Image (cartoon, rainbow, N blue to C red):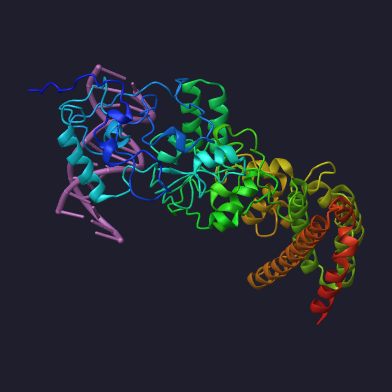
Length: 498
DNA sequence: GAGTTTGAAACT
DNA sequence: CAGTTTCAAACTC
Protein backbone atom coordinates (compact mmCIF):
# COMPACT_ATOMS: atom_id res chain seq x y z
CA UNK A 1 0.00 0.00 0.00
CA UNK A 2 1.37 3.24 -1.04
CA UNK A 3 2.18 5.54 1.70
CA UNK A 4 0.96 8.95 0.91
CA UNK A 5 3.86 11.27 0.83
CA UNK A 6 3.94 13.51 3.79
CA UNK A 7 4.60 16.59 1.88
CA UNK A 8 3.42 19.99 2.82
CA UNK A 9 3.57 22.50 0.14
CA UNK A 10 6.74 24.19 1.09
CA UNK A 11 6.68 27.89 0.97
CA UNK A 12 8.62 29.09 -1.94
CA UNK A 13 11.90 27.62 -0.83
CA UNK A 14 13.76 30.56 0.42
CA UNK A 15 17.35 29.91 1.27
CA UNK A 16 17.00 31.73 4.56
CA UNK A 17 14.10 29.60 5.60
CA UNK A 18 15.99 26.43 5.06
CA UNK A 19 17.39 24.83 8.14
CA UNK A 20 20.64 24.20 6.42
CA UNK A 21 21.17 27.77 5.60
CA UNK A 22 22.52 28.63 8.99
CA UNK A 23 25.19 26.01 9.02
CA UNK A 24 26.19 26.50 5.43
CA UNK A 25 26.15 30.02 4.23
CA UNK A 26 25.19 30.54 0.67
CA UNK A 27 28.24 32.57 -0.12
CA UNK A 28 29.70 30.62 -2.99
CA UNK A 29 33.05 29.16 -2.09
CA UNK A 30 35.60 28.56 -4.76
CA UNK A 31 34.89 25.59 -6.89
CA UNK A 32 35.75 22.18 -5.60
CA UNK A 33 35.73 23.34 -2.01
CA UNK A 34 33.40 22.26 0.69
CA UNK A 35 29.91 21.57 -0.44
CA UNK A 36 27.66 24.50 -0.29
CA UNK A 37 24.50 23.45 -1.89
CA UNK A 38 22.49 21.77 0.75
CA UNK A 39 19.60 24.08 1.12
CA UNK A 40 16.71 24.67 -1.13
CA UNK A 41 17.92 26.79 -3.92
CA UNK A 42 16.32 29.33 -6.11
CA UNK A 43 12.75 28.44 -6.79
CA UNK A 44 13.23 29.20 -10.39
CA UNK A 45 16.01 26.77 -10.76
CA UNK A 46 15.01 24.11 -13.18
CA UNK A 47 15.10 20.75 -11.62
CA UNK A 48 15.92 19.29 -14.94
CA UNK A 49 19.43 20.38 -14.28
CA UNK A 50 20.74 19.04 -11.02
CA UNK A 51 23.09 21.97 -10.82
CA UNK A 52 22.33 25.63 -10.65
CA UNK A 53 21.85 27.27 -13.95
CA UNK A 54 23.94 30.12 -12.74
CA UNK A 55 26.96 27.96 -12.90
CA UNK A 56 26.83 27.94 -16.62
CA UNK A 57 25.75 31.42 -17.49
CA UNK A 58 27.55 31.40 -20.74
CA UNK A 59 25.83 28.30 -21.85
CA UNK A 60 23.13 29.43 -24.08
CA UNK A 61 20.21 27.28 -23.14
CA UNK A 62 19.23 25.77 -26.36
CA UNK A 63 16.27 24.11 -24.81
CA UNK A 64 16.58 21.00 -26.78
CA UNK A 65 13.53 19.84 -25.03
CA UNK A 66 10.56 21.11 -26.82
CA UNK A 67 10.63 24.77 -26.23
CA UNK A 68 10.01 24.54 -22.54
CA UNK A 69 11.69 27.42 -20.92
CA UNK A 70 14.10 26.42 -18.25
CA UNK A 71 11.94 28.14 -15.67
CA UNK A 72 9.44 25.45 -15.05
CA UNK A 73 10.24 23.22 -12.15
CA UNK A 74 10.41 19.63 -13.03
CA UNK A 75 8.79 17.08 -10.85
CA UNK A 76 10.44 13.85 -9.96
CA UNK A 77 8.80 10.47 -10.02
CA UNK A 78 10.90 8.63 -7.54
CA UNK A 79 9.47 5.45 -6.12
CA UNK A 80 12.11 3.69 -4.14
CA UNK A 81 14.66 6.25 -3.23
CA UNK A 82 12.32 8.26 -1.05
CA UNK A 83 13.79 11.24 -2.84
CA UNK A 84 16.67 11.09 -0.41
CA UNK A 85 19.32 9.94 -2.80
CA UNK A 86 20.96 11.56 -5.69
CA UNK A 87 18.78 9.58 -7.99
CA UNK A 88 16.19 12.17 -7.18
CA UNK A 89 16.73 15.26 -9.19
CA UNK A 90 15.06 17.42 -6.62
CA UNK A 91 17.30 16.12 -3.90
CA UNK A 92 20.37 16.32 -6.06
CA UNK A 93 19.53 19.91 -6.82
CA UNK A 94 19.18 20.66 -3.15
CA UNK A 95 15.51 21.23 -3.64
CA UNK A 96 12.56 20.05 -1.71
CA UNK A 97 10.10 18.04 -3.64
CA UNK A 98 7.27 20.27 -4.61
CA UNK A 99 4.35 18.99 -6.54
CA UNK A 100 6.27 15.94 -7.61
CA UNK A 101 4.79 12.58 -8.40
CA UNK A 102 7.13 10.78 -6.08
CA UNK A 103 6.14 8.11 -3.60
CA UNK A 104 7.21 7.81 -0.01
CA UNK A 105 8.92 11.11 -0.39
CA UNK A 106 11.31 12.02 2.32
CA UNK A 107 12.53 15.18 0.70
CA UNK A 108 10.12 17.41 2.51
CA UNK A 109 10.23 20.08 5.14
CA UNK A 110 8.43 17.78 7.53
CA UNK A 111 11.16 15.22 7.19
CA UNK A 112 13.91 17.70 7.57
CA UNK A 113 15.85 15.59 10.02
CA UNK A 114 15.81 12.54 7.81
CA UNK A 115 16.63 14.74 4.90
CA UNK A 116 19.64 16.19 6.62
CA UNK A 117 20.82 12.72 7.49
CA UNK A 118 20.52 11.76 3.89
CA UNK A 119 22.41 14.84 2.87
CA UNK A 120 25.16 14.07 5.31
CA UNK A 121 25.38 10.50 4.17
CA UNK A 122 25.57 11.60 0.62
CA UNK A 123 28.26 14.10 1.38
CA UNK A 124 30.09 11.50 3.35
CA UNK A 125 30.19 9.35 0.30
CA UNK A 126 31.01 12.16 -2.00
CA UNK A 127 31.84 15.55 -0.56
CA UNK A 128 31.21 17.13 -3.89
CA UNK A 129 27.90 15.48 -4.39
CA UNK A 130 26.07 18.76 -4.20
CA UNK A 131 28.63 20.72 -6.04
CA UNK A 132 27.67 21.92 -9.44
CA UNK A 133 28.54 19.36 -11.99
CA UNK A 134 29.37 21.83 -14.64
CA UNK A 135 32.54 23.72 -14.33
CA UNK A 136 33.30 26.80 -16.28
CA UNK A 137 36.92 26.84 -15.52
CA UNK A 138 39.00 28.65 -12.95
CA UNK A 139 36.96 31.79 -13.05
CA UNK A 140 33.78 31.83 -11.11
CA UNK A 141 30.71 32.48 -13.13
CA UNK A 142 29.87 35.73 -11.48
CA UNK A 143 33.29 37.11 -12.08
CA UNK A 144 33.33 35.84 -15.55
CA UNK A 145 30.05 37.37 -16.32
CA UNK A 146 31.28 40.77 -15.41
CA UNK A 147 34.78 40.54 -16.59
CA UNK A 148 34.07 39.88 -20.20
CA UNK A 149 37.25 37.94 -20.40
CA UNK A 150 37.31 35.03 -22.76
CA UNK A 151 35.58 32.30 -20.87
CA UNK A 152 36.81 28.80 -20.84
CA UNK A 153 34.36 26.31 -22.12
CA UNK A 154 32.16 24.77 -19.51
CA UNK A 155 32.68 21.14 -18.87
CA UNK A 156 31.39 18.43 -16.70
CA UNK A 157 33.39 18.05 -13.56
CA UNK A 158 33.18 14.32 -13.44
CA UNK A 159 32.50 13.78 -17.06
CA UNK A 160 30.03 11.36 -18.45
CA UNK A 161 30.45 7.65 -18.96
CA UNK A 162 28.09 7.10 -21.80
CA UNK A 163 28.46 4.00 -23.87
CA UNK A 164 25.59 3.78 -26.24
CA UNK A 165 24.04 7.13 -26.53
CA UNK A 166 26.93 8.67 -28.34
CA UNK A 167 26.53 11.49 -25.85
CA UNK A 168 23.88 12.83 -28.13
CA UNK A 169 20.93 12.14 -25.95
CA UNK A 170 19.84 13.50 -22.69
CA UNK A 171 20.97 10.40 -20.98
CA UNK A 172 24.32 12.09 -21.26
CA UNK A 173 24.80 14.68 -18.59
CA UNK A 174 27.07 16.69 -20.78
CA UNK A 175 24.60 16.80 -23.59
CA UNK A 176 21.81 17.54 -21.22
CA UNK A 177 23.76 20.44 -19.86
CA UNK A 178 24.34 21.70 -23.37
CA UNK A 179 28.06 21.30 -23.15
CA UNK A 180 30.61 19.38 -25.07
CA UNK A 181 32.21 16.33 -23.66
CA UNK A 182 35.62 16.98 -22.28
CA UNK A 183 38.70 15.19 -21.16
CA UNK A 184 36.91 14.39 -17.95
CA UNK A 185 34.54 12.15 -19.79
CA UNK A 186 35.05 8.45 -20.15
CA UNK A 187 32.43 7.99 -22.75
CA UNK A 188 32.64 5.65 -25.66
CA UNK A 189 31.94 6.56 -29.22
CA UNK A 190 31.37 10.11 -28.22
CA UNK A 191 29.83 12.35 -30.79
CA UNK A 192 29.36 15.31 -28.56
CA UNK A 193 32.38 17.24 -29.65
CA UNK A 194 32.94 20.28 -31.73
CA UNK A 195 33.14 19.37 -35.35
CA UNK A 196 30.95 16.34 -34.95
CA UNK A 197 28.73 15.91 -37.93
CA UNK A 198 26.25 14.12 -35.76
CA UNK A 199 26.16 16.94 -33.30
CA UNK A 200 25.73 19.41 -36.06
CA UNK A 201 22.81 17.44 -37.38
CA UNK A 202 21.18 17.53 -34.00
CA UNK A 203 21.78 21.20 -33.59
CA UNK A 204 20.30 21.86 -36.95
CA UNK A 205 17.35 19.80 -35.90
CA UNK A 206 17.21 21.83 -32.78
CA UNK A 207 17.00 24.99 -34.76
CA UNK A 208 13.79 23.70 -36.10
CA UNK A 209 12.42 23.80 -32.57
CA UNK A 210 10.75 20.51 -33.18
CA UNK A 211 11.40 17.85 -30.65
CA UNK A 212 10.69 15.13 -33.12
CA UNK A 213 13.18 16.58 -35.49
CA UNK A 214 15.78 16.66 -32.77
CA UNK A 215 15.18 13.11 -31.78
CA UNK A 216 15.19 12.05 -35.36
CA UNK A 217 18.36 13.93 -36.00
CA UNK A 218 19.97 12.28 -33.02
CA UNK A 219 18.93 8.87 -34.14
CA UNK A 220 19.99 9.47 -37.67
CA UNK A 221 23.29 10.77 -36.45
CA UNK A 222 23.81 7.83 -34.18
CA UNK A 223 22.90 5.42 -36.88
CA UNK A 224 25.47 6.96 -39.08
CA UNK A 225 23.24 7.98 -41.90
CA UNK A 226 24.87 11.30 -41.78
CA UNK A 227 28.55 11.67 -42.21
CA UNK A 228 30.25 9.98 -39.41
CA UNK A 229 33.56 10.16 -37.81
CA UNK A 230 34.28 6.71 -38.96
CA UNK A 231 34.37 5.40 -35.45
CA UNK A 232 30.79 4.49 -35.35
CA UNK A 233 31.41 0.93 -34.37
CA UNK A 234 34.63 1.41 -32.65
CA UNK A 235 34.60 0.16 -29.11
CA UNK A 236 37.60 2.26 -28.37
CA UNK A 237 37.04 4.70 -25.65
CA UNK A 238 37.62 8.16 -26.84
CA UNK A 239 39.32 10.38 -24.42
CA UNK A 240 40.46 13.92 -24.72
CA UNK A 241 43.50 14.13 -22.55
CA UNK A 242 44.84 17.52 -23.43
CA UNK A 243 44.80 20.08 -20.74
CA UNK A 244 42.59 23.05 -21.15
CA UNK A 245 45.46 25.39 -20.77
CA UNK A 246 46.79 24.23 -24.03
CA UNK A 247 43.79 25.55 -25.80
CA UNK A 248 44.78 23.77 -28.87
CA UNK A 249 42.59 24.70 -31.68
CA UNK A 250 42.41 22.98 -34.96
CA UNK A 251 41.39 24.71 -38.04
CA UNK A 252 41.66 22.20 -40.75
CA UNK A 253 39.17 22.84 -43.39
CA UNK A 254 36.39 20.37 -43.55
CA UNK A 255 34.79 19.04 -40.48
CA UNK A 256 35.58 15.52 -41.44
CA UNK A 257 39.25 16.23 -41.49
CA UNK A 258 38.97 17.98 -38.22
CA UNK A 259 37.14 15.13 -36.68
CA UNK A 260 39.65 12.67 -37.89
CA UNK A 261 42.46 14.78 -36.65
CA UNK A 262 40.75 15.08 -33.34
CA UNK A 263 40.21 11.39 -33.14
CA UNK A 264 43.73 10.65 -34.07
CA UNK A 265 45.15 13.03 -31.57
CA UNK A 266 42.63 12.70 -28.78
CA UNK A 267 42.06 16.36 -28.67
CA UNK A 268 39.71 17.63 -26.07
CA UNK A 269 36.62 18.36 -27.98
CA UNK A 270 35.77 21.24 -25.78
CA UNK A 271 38.96 22.90 -26.79
CA UNK A 272 38.54 23.09 -30.46
CA UNK A 273 35.58 25.31 -30.69
CA UNK A 274 35.72 28.70 -32.23
CA UNK A 275 37.81 27.72 -35.14
CA UNK A 276 35.56 25.41 -36.98
CA UNK A 277 32.91 25.70 -39.50
CA UNK A 278 30.43 25.14 -36.78
CA UNK A 279 31.21 28.40 -35.27
CA UNK A 280 28.14 30.42 -34.95
CA UNK A 281 25.91 27.58 -35.82
CA UNK A 282 26.30 25.35 -32.87
CA UNK A 283 23.61 26.85 -30.76
CA UNK A 284 24.45 26.08 -27.21
CA UNK A 285 28.08 25.69 -27.94
CA UNK A 286 28.62 28.85 -29.73
CA UNK A 287 30.20 31.91 -28.40
CA UNK A 288 31.90 30.18 -25.54
CA UNK A 289 35.29 31.36 -26.40
CA UNK A 290 36.71 33.69 -28.88
CA UNK A 291 40.15 32.35 -28.37
CA UNK A 292 41.35 31.86 -31.84
CA UNK A 293 44.30 29.66 -32.27
CA UNK A 294 44.90 29.18 -35.90
CA UNK A 295 46.94 26.30 -36.95
CA UNK A 296 49.70 27.16 -39.36
CA UNK A 297 47.93 24.79 -41.64
CA UNK A 298 44.74 26.78 -41.47
CA UNK A 299 43.42 27.29 -44.93
CA UNK A 300 46.29 25.25 -46.20
CA UNK A 301 44.62 21.97 -46.82
CA UNK A 302 41.68 22.36 -49.05
CA UNK A 303 39.39 19.80 -50.43
CA UNK A 304 40.91 20.30 -53.81
CA UNK A 305 44.26 19.49 -52.30
CA UNK A 306 43.01 16.22 -51.03
CA UNK A 307 41.58 15.38 -54.39
CA UNK A 308 44.76 16.46 -56.01
CA UNK A 309 46.76 14.24 -53.73
CA UNK A 310 44.57 11.29 -54.53
CA UNK A 311 44.93 11.98 -58.19
CA UNK A 312 48.66 12.24 -57.91
CA UNK A 313 48.85 8.95 -56.14
CA UNK A 314 46.77 7.33 -58.79
CA UNK A 315 48.99 8.76 -61.45
CA UNK A 316 52.22 7.61 -59.96
CA UNK A 317 50.81 4.22 -59.21
CA UNK A 318 49.64 3.70 -62.71
CA UNK A 319 52.84 5.01 -64.00
CA UNK A 320 54.70 2.50 -61.90
CA UNK A 321 52.55 -0.20 -63.34
CA UNK A 322 53.22 0.92 -66.83
CA UNK A 323 56.86 1.26 -66.15
CA UNK A 324 56.94 -2.23 -64.87
CA UNK A 325 55.48 -3.62 -68.04
CA UNK A 326 57.67 -1.60 -70.26
CA UNK A 327 61.01 -1.95 -68.70
CA UNK A 328 62.69 -1.16 -71.92
CA UNK A 329 61.15 2.25 -71.78
CA UNK A 330 62.39 3.07 -68.35
CA UNK A 331 64.06 6.21 -69.39
CA UNK A 332 60.94 7.44 -71.01
CA UNK A 333 59.00 6.66 -67.91
CA UNK A 334 61.27 8.74 -65.78
CA UNK A 335 60.72 11.61 -68.06
CA UNK A 336 57.01 11.20 -67.69
CA UNK A 337 57.48 11.03 -63.99
CA UNK A 338 59.38 14.24 -64.10
CA UNK A 339 56.79 15.89 -66.17
CA UNK A 340 54.03 14.95 -63.86
CA UNK A 341 55.71 15.82 -60.66
CA UNK A 342 57.20 19.07 -61.78
CA UNK A 343 53.89 20.28 -62.96
CA UNK A 344 52.17 19.89 -59.66
CA UNK A 345 51.19 23.48 -59.50
CA UNK A 346 49.22 23.24 -62.64
CA UNK A 347 45.70 22.16 -62.44
CA UNK A 348 44.70 18.61 -62.60
CA UNK A 349 43.37 18.63 -66.10
CA UNK A 350 46.58 19.91 -67.50
CA UNK A 351 48.51 17.25 -65.70
CA UNK A 352 46.16 14.64 -66.85
CA UNK A 353 46.31 15.65 -70.45
CA UNK A 354 50.04 15.81 -70.41
CA UNK A 355 50.29 12.48 -68.85
CA UNK A 356 47.83 11.13 -71.30
CA UNK A 357 49.75 12.47 -74.20
CA UNK A 358 53.08 11.33 -72.95
CA UNK A 359 51.87 7.93 -72.05
CA UNK A 360 50.00 7.50 -75.24
CA UNK A 361 52.83 8.51 -77.40
CA UNK A 362 55.48 6.64 -75.55
CA UNK A 363 53.74 3.50 -74.58
CA UNK A 364 51.46 3.20 -77.50
CA UNK A 365 48.39 2.47 -75.45
CA UNK A 366 46.31 5.30 -76.70
CA UNK A 367 43.15 3.40 -77.09
CA UNK A 368 43.11 1.70 -73.77
CA UNK A 369 44.07 4.77 -71.88
CA UNK A 370 41.46 6.81 -73.56
CA UNK A 371 38.96 4.27 -72.49
CA UNK A 372 40.13 4.30 -68.97
CA UNK A 373 40.73 7.96 -68.61
CA UNK A 374 37.75 9.91 -69.71
CA UNK A 375 38.74 13.34 -70.65
CA UNK A 376 36.44 15.21 -68.35
CA UNK A 377 36.48 12.85 -65.47
CA UNK A 378 37.90 14.04 -62.20
CA UNK A 379 39.72 10.83 -61.69
CA UNK A 380 41.79 8.46 -63.67
CA UNK A 381 39.49 5.69 -62.78
CA UNK A 382 36.45 5.27 -64.83
CA UNK A 383 33.78 6.89 -62.79
CA UNK A 384 31.08 4.44 -63.56
CA UNK A 385 33.27 1.52 -62.77
CA UNK A 386 34.32 3.08 -59.56
CA UNK A 387 30.79 3.77 -58.60
CA UNK A 388 30.02 0.17 -59.13
CA UNK A 389 33.12 -1.20 -57.57
CA UNK A 390 33.63 1.13 -54.72
CA UNK A 391 30.15 1.99 -53.67
CA UNK A 392 29.69 -1.51 -52.49
CA UNK A 393 32.40 -1.09 -49.99
CA UNK A 394 31.99 0.00 -46.44
CA UNK A 395 29.07 2.26 -46.11
CA UNK A 396 27.23 3.52 -49.06
CA UNK A 397 28.25 7.02 -48.23
CA UNK A 398 29.31 9.33 -50.91
CA UNK A 399 33.01 9.47 -51.44
CA UNK A 400 35.15 12.06 -53.01
CA UNK A 401 36.68 11.30 -56.35
CA UNK A 402 40.00 10.84 -54.72
CA UNK A 403 38.60 8.46 -52.21
CA UNK A 404 36.97 6.53 -54.96
CA UNK A 405 40.24 6.27 -56.72
CA UNK A 406 41.96 4.99 -53.63
CA UNK A 407 39.21 2.57 -52.91
CA UNK A 408 39.63 1.37 -56.40
CA UNK A 409 43.26 0.91 -55.65
CA UNK A 410 42.54 -1.29 -52.73
CA UNK A 411 40.13 -3.32 -54.66
CA UNK A 412 42.35 -3.90 -57.58
CA UNK A 413 45.99 -4.27 -57.14
CA UNK A 414 46.80 -2.71 -60.42
CA UNK A 415 44.12 -0.11 -60.53
CA UNK A 416 41.32 -1.77 -62.32
CA UNK A 417 41.05 -5.10 -63.93
CA UNK A 418 40.14 -3.63 -67.25
CA UNK A 419 43.16 -1.49 -67.22
CA UNK A 420 45.35 -4.28 -66.12
CA UNK A 421 43.99 -6.37 -68.91
CA UNK A 422 45.34 -3.84 -71.29
CA UNK A 423 48.83 -4.58 -70.19
CA UNK A 424 50.20 -6.87 -72.80
CA UNK A 425 52.29 -8.86 -70.41
CA UNK A 426 51.20 -11.91 -68.52
CA UNK A 427 52.32 -11.30 -65.00
CA UNK A 428 53.60 -14.10 -62.85
CA UNK A 429 53.36 -14.01 -59.12
CA UNK A 430 56.80 -12.67 -58.74
CA UNK A 431 56.10 -10.04 -61.31
CA UNK A 432 52.98 -9.02 -59.50
CA UNK A 433 54.88 -8.79 -56.28
CA UNK A 434 57.48 -6.60 -57.89
CA UNK A 435 54.80 -4.54 -59.46
CA UNK A 436 53.21 -4.03 -56.10
CA UNK A 437 56.51 -2.98 -54.68
CA UNK A 438 57.05 -0.53 -57.47
CA UNK A 439 53.62 0.91 -57.02
CA UNK A 440 54.04 1.14 -53.30
CA UNK A 441 57.30 2.96 -53.68
CA UNK A 442 55.81 5.36 -56.13
CA UNK A 443 52.83 6.10 -53.96
CA UNK A 444 54.89 6.56 -50.85
CA UNK A 445 57.28 8.86 -52.62
CA UNK A 446 54.50 10.96 -53.89
CA UNK A 447 52.84 11.03 -50.53
CA UNK A 448 56.06 12.10 -48.91
CA UNK A 449 56.36 14.88 -51.40
CA UNK A 450 52.93 16.02 -50.58
CA UNK A 451 53.52 15.98 -46.86
CA UNK A 452 56.60 18.07 -47.34
CA UNK A 453 54.57 20.43 -49.35
CA UNK A 454 52.00 20.76 -46.61
CA UNK A 455 54.70 21.26 -44.02
CA UNK A 456 56.25 23.97 -46.10
CA UNK A 457 52.92 25.65 -46.45
CA UNK A 458 52.41 25.57 -42.75
CA UNK A 459 55.81 27.04 -42.14
CA UNK A 460 55.13 29.85 -44.52
CA UNK A 461 51.79 30.48 -42.89
CA UNK A 462 53.34 30.52 -39.47
CA UNK A 463 56.02 32.93 -40.52
CA UNK A 464 53.53 35.15 -42.15
CA UNK A 465 51.14 35.13 -39.25
CA UNK A 466 53.87 35.78 -36.75
CA UNK A 467 55.15 38.66 -38.79
CA UNK A 468 51.71 40.07 -39.14
CA UNK A 469 51.35 39.76 -42.84
CA UNK A 470 50.11 36.32 -43.55
CA UNK A 471 48.38 36.97 -46.79
CA UNK A 472 50.65 35.25 -49.17
CA UNK A 473 49.37 31.82 -48.77
CA UNK A 474 47.83 31.79 -52.13
CA UNK A 475 51.04 32.91 -53.69
CA UNK A 476 52.73 30.11 -51.86
CA UNK A 477 50.18 27.69 -53.07
CA UNK A 478 50.63 28.84 -56.58
CA UNK A 479 54.34 28.45 -56.48
CA UNK A 480 54.64 25.55 -54.18
CA UNK A 481 55.80 23.08 -56.72
CA UNK A 482 58.46 25.29 -58.13
CA UNK A 483 59.84 26.13 -54.73
CA UNK A 484 59.52 22.86 -52.99
CA UNK A 485 59.00 19.97 -55.21
CA UNK A 486 61.99 20.31 -57.44
CA UNK A 487 64.53 19.87 -54.66
CA UNK A 488 62.58 17.00 -53.28
CA UNK A 489 62.34 15.56 -56.65
CA UNK A 490 66.03 15.89 -57.22
CA UNK A 491 66.68 14.18 -53.98
CA UNK A 492 64.38 11.43 -54.96
CA UNK A 493 66.03 10.98 -58.25
CA UNK A 494 69.28 10.54 -56.51
CA UNK A 495 67.84 7.99 -54.18
CA UNK A 496 66.17 6.09 -56.92
CA UNK A 497 69.16 6.06 -59.12
CA UNK A 498 71.38 5.08 -56.32
C1' DG B 1 0.79 5.16 -21.06
C1' DA B 2 3.38 0.95 -20.85
C1' DG B 3 7.60 -0.94 -21.76
C1' DT B 4 12.50 -0.42 -22.88
C1' DT B 5 16.91 1.74 -22.78
C1' DT B 6 20.28 4.28 -20.67
C1' DG B 7 23.72 5.94 -17.52
C1' DA B 8 24.39 7.96 -12.84
C1' DA B 9 24.39 6.62 -8.22
C1' DA B 10 24.80 3.26 -4.93
C1' DC B 11 26.56 -0.82 -3.46
C1' DT B 12 29.77 -4.84 -3.02
C1' DC C 1 38.96 0.58 -7.88
C1' DA C 2 36.35 -2.42 -10.77
C1' DG C 3 32.19 -4.85 -11.27
C1' DT C 4 27.32 -5.18 -10.24
C1' DT C 5 22.85 -3.57 -8.85
C1' DT C 6 19.49 -0.06 -8.23
C1' DC C 7 17.21 3.71 -9.73
C1' DA C 8 14.75 7.18 -12.36
C1' DA C 9 14.95 9.84 -16.51
C1' DA C 10 14.87 9.50 -21.36
C1' DC C 11 13.16 7.31 -24.96
C1' DT C 12 10.30 4.19 -28.05
C1' DC C 13 6.23 2.23 -29.54
